[in-house]
Image (cartoon, rainbow, N blue to C red; front, side):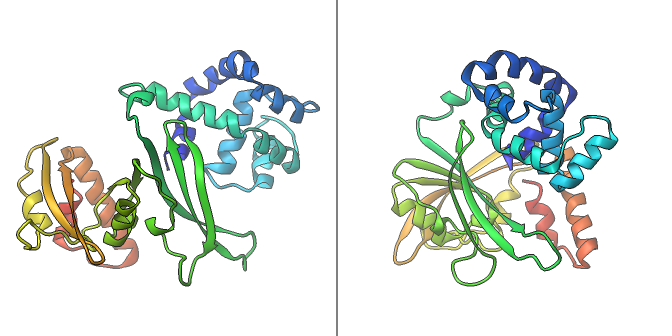
Length: 290
């Protein structure tokens, strides 16, 4: 998700070099660097080296033990996996601070001015316990924007009732704006958020999305998307969604990608089809253009 993307971007040399300044000047002022310092009193580690270690573990998926072995082989530092775990636990606010600063640096406008409402990004993932027979668990969580603070998470089994990724499992408050990926594009989930006085912005899943016109006629997504033929062209249509026992109005929005982005999306579809030995329908390529 966005947090991981920020951390990977921070791995660039420019951000790594500026990390020393951030820690020494700003983080020490609010006690975060001091908190990390207590954990690394015996084996001091430069902030950029610590960031490299944490990125190896969190973004690339290496275990703590493998991470410290790679660090030793690269002559970065020589610490134990237990010591790295302690540093990871003490680095939460430090990492969040850097993600917020990257968001502030790359946003076209100040993130605080984006909305006066409470904006939340919802996503889910599956984690596996160590070992060949380790159990799998599904994590549903939401992150506040622009502060990038997790305000909800829930751990469930990966199978069985109530274990799927759904907006219905999320506590929602009035006037909130919920952002979610196509996996959460269900009429029941959207209706659930609406009934709690909040709004939802979700990427459309063409396979499960059913929308109707004001006259009750089912809307064809491809027919409307084909009217967008130029790069960057935007389309917007009022639609009616049928919830459980009620109908409500929404907006369907689309923007056509650049030719380069379309080609990349089509290549991803072709690689996935080749890997899974499946045939991709022509309509899927058209949807990938938006």
